[in-house]
Length: 303
Ligand SMILES: Cc1cc2nc3c(=O)[nH]c(=O)nc-3n(C[C@H](O)[C@H](O)[C@H](O)COP(=O)(O)OP(=O)(O)OC[C@H]3O[C@@H](n4cnc5c(N)ncnc54)[C@H](O)[C@@H]3O)c2cc1C
Image (cartoon, rainbow, N blue to C red; front, top):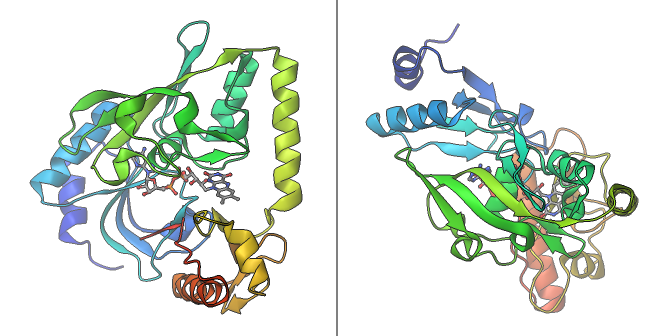
């Protein structure tokens, strides 16, 4: 057995009730199924537990990294030293506030939130059904699909700063834009979000969700691990079309490849490493640039 690190010993001593895992493989927590061991992964179940974790890590001068459902992340093969705080399924809970609004905790998946809204006869979250991330991750990067996005329905967000203090930010304050919110520049953890929706018949909402799910299954390589769209939509084009036009469908680096089904997806074809994926994204971006003059930027967060 390997000896415990100082961080592992200190966190265990200072937070005896916290759910902590040591040397936890990231590949168990990323949709790419890639990533080496994390020194400490913590699973706080409440605001109080999260606040205690943040305060304790600040005392030790450790800056934690926040993980949602891991569906937009490429984690390093060598793993990560320090603390990763995983919120998926931890910060759990959903409630109806009034005729049009629901509050959803950050760790709930967007699909579950969309199903909850549908069951209440509230329309507006249909686009989120099928996005595999958590509400926290969705707010962080203003997730969207089929003409809808989180910024379009989000009334306010409850945010915890790294000192454990909570504040409420309204929609304008979140500075939502294409796959972006202010949280990318500022430090802050999404605790919950309030969504403003529109009453509609339940069957109509469910039918729309079904149609969007069918569209997703027909066009996306859901049978291979991936992190969704590999590149952001560039000004003046669509990443998938540009990659296809450069003849890169099926292009491979090691175990990573551009999907034959949807050129916008980089997939793990089996045994891909983070270096394979990084090199694939680099070569694809260069070849698309040579072919079209348009530079593709990764949408996947590379840790
Ligand atoms: C098959 C597939 C299909 C996809 N389709 C879509 C799609 O249609 N549209 C779309 O927009 N995306 C799509 N994605 C990408 C992904 O699901 C979204 O980007 C999602 O919003 C990421 O959420 P997550 O919880 O997985 O975040 P993670 O991948 O865990 O994290 C992403 C970033 O968010 C930060 N973060 C996570 N939770 C919090 C929090 N509570 N507070 C603060 N920061 C946080 C992390 O630190 C990280 O920087 C798809 C992915 C896959 C695998």
